[in-house]
Length: 134
Figure 1 (cartoon, one colour):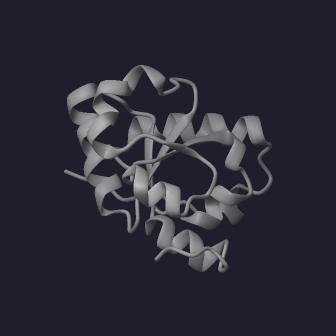
Figure 2 (cartoon, rainbow, N blue to C red):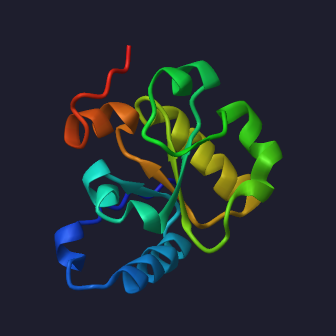
């Protein structure tokens, strides 16, 4: 079962960064999958550990400055993921990231995983319209 929770950042504006991070970490332990929009991430980007799971050639062509660990490699590189931050997985549209997020949660017991809803396509639409994807 997958639970989708839309988090409205405006409701949390009064929280400071540390409280916000703690809130998201605790929330991720309660629900199975957390989806965050680009606008929810952009103002607090440093609070998250964003992983672009697209292939290296996709990342090399266009990225938002986060770490690149391709989907096929991530399960073998779990040790590189922090336990004290929300890990936000991103791909082109969010579909690969969602599938990998579920795998990490179910098979590896990671509860601090979220998905960038809409992937880098949504990031371009909401945050960085000059980003060239193709």
